[in-house]
Structure formats: C-alpha cells, structure tokens
Amino acid sequence: MKQETYTKEILLGKTKIYVIEPDLSEKEREKRLQELKRFILTISQEETSRKS
Image (cartoon, rainbow, N blue to C red; front, top):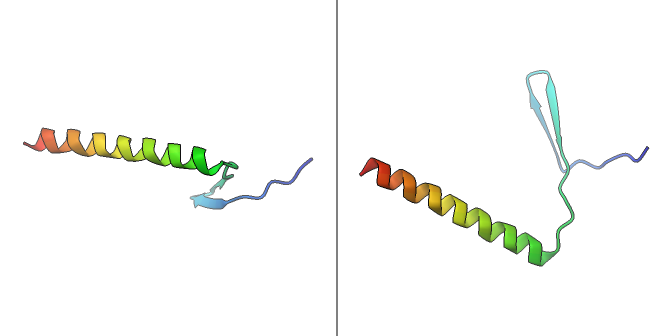
C-alpha cells in the first residue's frame, strides 16, 4: 500500500481531514484560478445587488 504525502491536515474535533494537493500543470492551475476569480466576483456582485 502506497503511503500518501498530505499537503495539509485539518483537525475538527476528533475528526482528521487529510488534504492531498493534485499535481497540476501551470496552465491547469491558471485556468482553475481564473474560474475561482470569476466565481468570487459573481457572488460578490450578487450580494451587492441584494443589499441595494
């Protein structure tokens, strides 16, 4: 059995969550970052319009 290397370990109460970061090419990383930025901007705009 292969032992995984964890990028991050999170402890919530008695539960441990292990995060394993995927291997991404620079192009894929940039694509995901742009999608995340668009998502955040969309949510921000929706919240702003709700408050108006």
